[in-house]
Structure formats: C-alpha cells, structure tokens
Amino acid sequence: MTPTLAALCGFAFLAGFIDSVVGGGGLIQIPAMFVLMPGVPPAAILGTNKFAAIWGTASATIQYARKVPMPWSVVLPAGVVAAGASFLGARTVSLIGNAQLKPLILVMMIAVLAYTLWKKDFGKLHAPKLNPRQQLLTGLAVGAVIGFYDGFFGPGTGSFLIFAFVGLFGFSFLVASASAKAVNSITNFAALTYFVASGSVLYAYAIPMAAFNVGGSLIGSRLAIAKGSGFVRVLFVVVVTALIGSFARDILNH
Image (cartoon, rainbow, N blue to C red; front, side):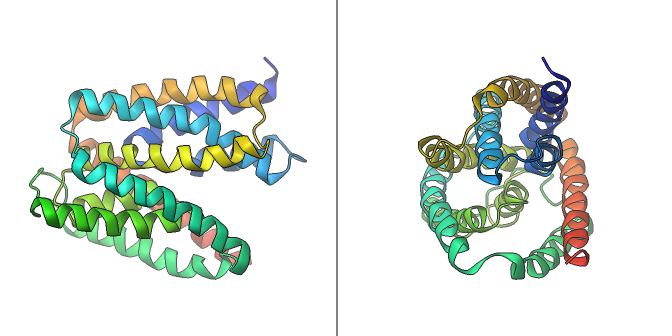
C-alpha cells in the first residue's frame, strides 16, 4: 500500500465513523481526496468517494436496523423520492450553478445549531408526534427537498436529515440518525449508478477505501447505539459547527 493510499484509507475510516453517527463524512473524505490526488478529474474523485462511502452507509444502516426501531413507513418513501429529487438536483446544478446557495445554507446551518443548543431536550426522547398519514406526507416532502439539495449541492445532507427527523417527526437523535443513514443509502446508490456507468470510479483506490469506511461505520454506529441519543446530539453539534466553519471559509475566500 502506497503512502497516499494509506492516508486516504485513514481518512475513509474517520469519515465512516463520523458519517455513521451524524452524517458529514464527505466533509472529511472529499477534501482529503482533492489534496492527496492532485490532477485527478473532479468527477473521478466524486465517483470514487461515493463508491467508498456507500458501503459504510449501508453497513451502518444494517447495524441500526438490528438494534433501533426503524420507521420504514417513513424512511422508504422518503428515500425513493429523495433519490429522484437528487437526480433532478444534479441536473439543475449543471444549468445554474450552486455558488449563490452558500450564504443561504450558512444561515440555515447557524439556525440549526442555535435551535439545537437552545432546546436542551431536543431529540432526547423518541416521541413521534405525527399520525401515519402525516408521517408519510411529511416524509415525501422531506425526501423531495433534501434529496434535491443533496444532488444540487450536498454538504450537510445527513445533518439536515437528522434535524428534520427530530424536529418534524419527534424522533430521538438515535432513531433520526438511523433513519438518515437509510435514506442516504438509497440516494447514494442512485448517484453511484451514474458514476459507475460513466466510468468515474478509480477502483484501485475505491475498494480499499470502502473497506476502511465500513470499519469506521461499524464502530461509529455501534458506539451510537451503545451511548444513545446524548452522544449523537453532542457529535451532531460538533459536525454542524465544522460545517458552518467550512461554509464561512468558502464564502470569505470567494
């Protein structure tokens, strides 16, 4: 294993760990790939990242499904709609670009962080507040909006999903994290089919990175299940804070 591949695998492990709990793995893995793989086309980096990440996301989903009551009646419809909306978002970004979205997303992230810190009991207990029909309709709406955002822009998708599942549905942070992983698995698969079909996956890097991403995901999801919603909430705050810093830096640099 070359030093570059070893470093990429280390970042893949860390990304899998963080992503399995609160999302945001791309915040770690994608920048590392751009730094360590100069000269590689962006499409190949994104395709390789997606191949590595989807295995970790899927393994985390399986872990959660074994131990956490998964609201499949919400997750599956939301995931299917999100996959279609993600494709539409990806098509739209090629037409109008996404740079102008950054200030708006920064404001939204700050609001998410402020609300989470202000509401000390936010996501502490699992207390669904919608009836089955309301859950289905709200799940479809969440899938459409966040799925489109994922395809159009992307960073923070997992965190937005968790916030939506806690705030709109009344799920605990643990159940919300599990639900977000399941939705992400579906949308990632939809995106990966495009990258594979277009030959934008570097398998010599993607396969070993996927193995390490899975390792990080298994440890992260098991720790989240063992520690409960309090642990997920703390890590959620940390990751959202990091996302805010990333967005602010990008805006100031342009």
